[in-house]
Image (cartoon, rainbow over all chains, first blue to last red; front, side, top):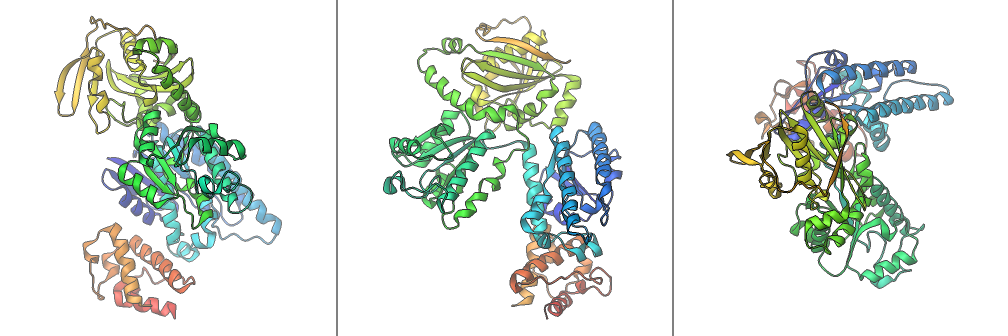
Length: 537
Length: 90
């Protein structure tokens, strides 16, 4: 059971109860009494996730803003001390001004606001250095819904409960969003319709110059939406265009019009007259990802319903033609498109998927995998217990479903614990088409491979087999391994058998294996080079 | 505006999260002050504020020194809570 605990200087029980209800079984959600922040952080009680919500009066009273820095420093040191002992994920609220302070000089009003913004920068700076600390952006929520709608002064003064009902709903959403982000399950592919979604109007009817995407309304909405998609791509989500149009027409449109998105920004272009669900399925196959990694955006009820029926795992989002400007908050409102902090691999992903397409074309030329892999000139860099890669290791274990030998998930703190008693391997792969980044992770404790996960985009070039060969070579002894069948990892069911391991125990969905030191594997995958670049044991 | 059904709806909706058996189909004599803890009473207050604001088009603050005081709290019966709200509206 995962334990989540709230700490605050105000009453946050209504939020805690909503979170408890939303998370359901498998979670224990508790809350300390008001103003027990320091006491809890100094205590020995361990929880998996600590949610710290601090209203502005924790940091300053009336106009006394001078203490903010000092209080923040103290708070950070208490949190660091607690995390060192407990390896807990932290969600920390930033500051929002609900103080009853009054100022009679117009100039001071701006100054005070500046101090809160500066404090929030400091909180953000602190969180960006700590993989397991995330910021709850309450400042932005207050800005969005307005202080009068957010804050209840009399409730605060009477019962130390300063939040309106609206605030509680917004705060709950923000907490849930950040809890989901801690799990690291971000969508990988965003497939977007063309007509009335990327541009206003129907290309086939309105023509290249007739569709709207420019600086005038309504074209400006589509222009801004394309810019947002471009930003999404910059953060590593792969874009695809799925449109019921002739491919040549789409290409001509992008050539003739100067849109924010260029045709090369789409890693896949599916412009044809097939059903959207067939196209989405083929895009997922092309990128080697599960359908649950795909977001599909379209303006049509018919298309959205069709995809939802045929491919229920795909997240379908409707582009709203009746409230056009509402679409500009569409992408930001999809929790599974948000990222807490981006790894190098995240950012490089769009380019990597493009490379994958080129590899697929090359694959068709060769008759066997070995010749194909040889032609790719694959190189693996192996790191052992490298804290610099911790974030990516956690992300891979938590995001990978198909090639994940046990589907056991890990928090950063747990991986840090394993550094002390075993090996956390990460494998960076590159070939002649480019750098794929870290795509494989494995945990070995007491000569047993406790878990092994490989990004699906690295499959099909014997990397998984080479990784096991590398681990065997490094361990230099009998190697044991575990497998747990899940609803999504069927393709790996006989993976260890293929690597030459012997089943020594099999029970229900679990298998345990051993590879005896004296065994020789027929194929050593010598055509894949490898190098240990970091070893900290 | 039917204040009774509105207030009952607020409590029933909140109880979807709380899952309290005593609050399913309750009658007007129910002593909310005894049955529901103080944090849940606060939730009833702020949720009622929101619903009233939406219905009336203006914010009516319901926070009151007596809300949590045994013996005088309007939560000692649903009828009294209803009277309290009607007093605030008028």
